[in-house]
Image (cartoon, rainbow, N blue to C red; front, side, top):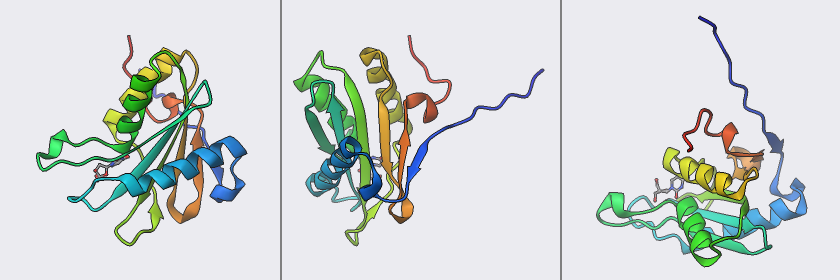
Length: 156
Ligand code: THU
């Protein structure tokens, strides 16, 4: 038997303003998308923005439903919309941010199901899909691929 360790590497920027231009613009689109959330049950808004290889940005927000499991997270709303609108265009980056009931930006780290969907589109793209997360205190965390957020992930 061997004890083994999985190390997760990511970059932390102290604020949105200090992000590189592409990442900052994408996160700003995700922030805008929080205003399109339909979240009458949780009152928690999430925005996501996907940057495609062709330069297009597709946004999404969480869409809830009275039959709770029928709702969808912002990340999957954005990725599924991107794949449906641009079927063969690889996804490069996704930015994710939450907004609480007070209207303050906050962290919304992706759920397991959304991580699995990122994993699939990273495989389809054939290159790492960067994940940009707004974090507590206004910092921003940047993960250079889904392996950092979903170690030992399932894929064919
Ligand atoms: N939610 C997202 O859209 N993305 C996340 O990363 C975490 C949670 C949504 C689901 C639900 O509409 C609300 O936030 C509260 O869980």
